[in-house]
Length: 442
Ligand SMILES: Nc1ncnc2c1ncn2[C@@H]1O[C@H](COP(=O)(O)OP(=O)(O)OP(=O)(O)O)[C@@H](O)[C@H]1O
Ligand SMILES: O=P(O)(O)OC[C@H]1O[C@](O)(CO)[C@@H](O)[C@@H]1O
Ligand SMILES: [Mg+2]
Image 1 (cartoon, rainbow, N blue to C red):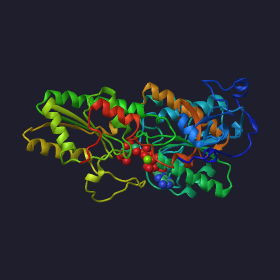
Image 2: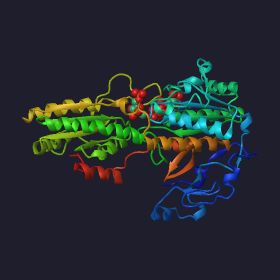
Image 3: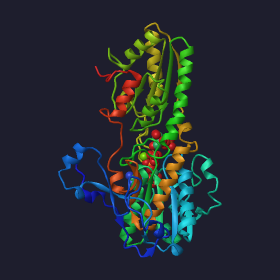
Image 4: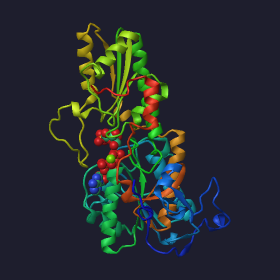
């Protein structure tokens, strides 16, 4: 993989001219196993073989700027106004992030104003910009107890010129964009418009996706909560299928291009016998196809549980009608219902008439409040985002990479997708736990 150190450098608006409220506490800190000094950097790679293959001196190895408070900051807090927007699909923890940003900005930096833009980037357009809400400690007090986002969200295309007009009108100095790959592309369009006008506005991204499909982040916030919810649905169809004759449990889980939720949920209680994900193609028919394998399993065990990610096996489906949503994301065919039909048909034809229990928990896994682990993660990301913004970083995303909080340039986070590697150890764990064949190919 070619990755130059320069691709990993984040942008800054300029020199930091103000003392940070954290200056004193940071004065004596040095890099340790539990802290990375602001002038130090975190390595991208973590194996000797990859580091050696880079063939460059240590200081030229690909590395990321450490996140966290700075001794000096770019914006004068007394004169700083901040905006927050949440975009794309829901994800557990959005309210924790909003709350964390507001608390940090209020209690430590004491900035002048914090505004929440309603319903994603749409809230920055001329049509909706009046619906902005001012956020203070009271406004965010208990919001972490609820799923969703108090600001609302949306998909769809918006005009960057209109959005920057709104930022200028409100006097926004730092915009926090909480969203997925689409939102980060949207945020980059906003920074391009800011640059074109020569404005002094920082744009900071906080990566959100229950699919866990963004690169350069260990795991995205809300993912753990989402797959834990999914686990309960798998357990239900397992119990149901166990009690029925030729019981077939099928659970379809979210995951457009990445099957992480399906893999983790399946591993969590180990009730699944087959896991089908977008990254690993499969066929239904033939001696090695899914239908025959499931049939064998039902013959031997009297039941079966199949977990399928929504983006799996799309090549097997015929697409009808509109193929993209408002944001340009491909609309998927329903692999869950298709599998249900084909499995029912097949098992009936081989004299194993099944009792099928089919669940598509869909929004039920992403609309819940974050669990304790994700809440901690969210608040720490929120703090890191605030520090980055106040220090004048821009077009920058805060992430957790190899357990360290770091800054990643936005173009890099949208450069490719994080997917389950069929040769990696996660998929190996799934194969070990389920006992399913390595391949369903003929
Ligand atoms: N290619 C793009 N260029 C510019 N802006 C985009 C692009 N794609 C999406 N956006 C903007 O980002 C917003 C959210 O995008 P999208 O609906 O794809 O969700 P997302 O951020 O990818 O989150 P998720 O996939 O987790 O639901 C859209 O409303 C749109 O304003
Ligand atoms: O129905 P919506 O809101 O477009 O969201 C569905 C998609 O959003 C996600 O939750 C996140 O991208 C996907 O897993 C899912 O396909
Ligand atoms: Mg997306």
